[in-house]
Amino acid sequence: MWEGKDGKWFDKISIGGHLKNYDSFVNLTHFKGHTAGGFGGCNKNIGIGCADGLVGKAMIHSTPGQDDMWDIAKEEFMERMCESTKAVTDHFAGNIIHINVMRNMSVSCDCEGIYAAPVVTPNVGILASVDILAADQASVDMIYAMKEEYRHDL
Image (tube, rainbow, N blue to C red; front, top):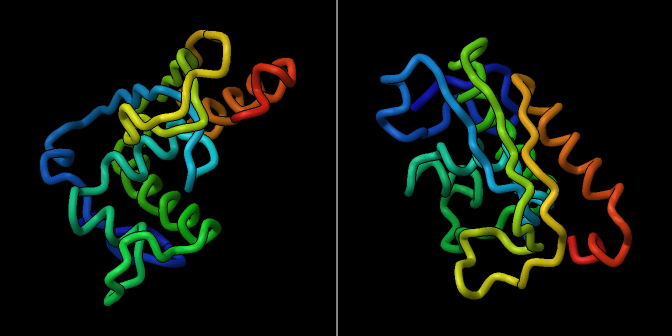
């Protein structure tokens, strides 16, 4: 469990056990759409990807004591995911870089595997920043700058 700071939803978040063994972090993300998160970029990659498999992901996705792992509403889910991201980025402060690869983008998350929607956008390129919000905002801005025919699904 990692300590959170001033969280609305968590005082602690359960993160993958070996992450604390490192003093730097390269956040390499395949940018795409995501059903619950809107866009799946650097924020989602850390917030969900670094949460441990059972406890951490359940803390973000569900209300304690509920059987339905997907019962959290979209806005609350986003807040929970961001609190998880904050715990990780605070730990690696000054030693983290965020990279979004904008290639083969679909409205679906990679976690959907063969059931994912088809690729709908042209390959854009790679964006990087030491500021997680700058990397994700620039990626979203590039999506909105595309012609409607390429971005409508996203």
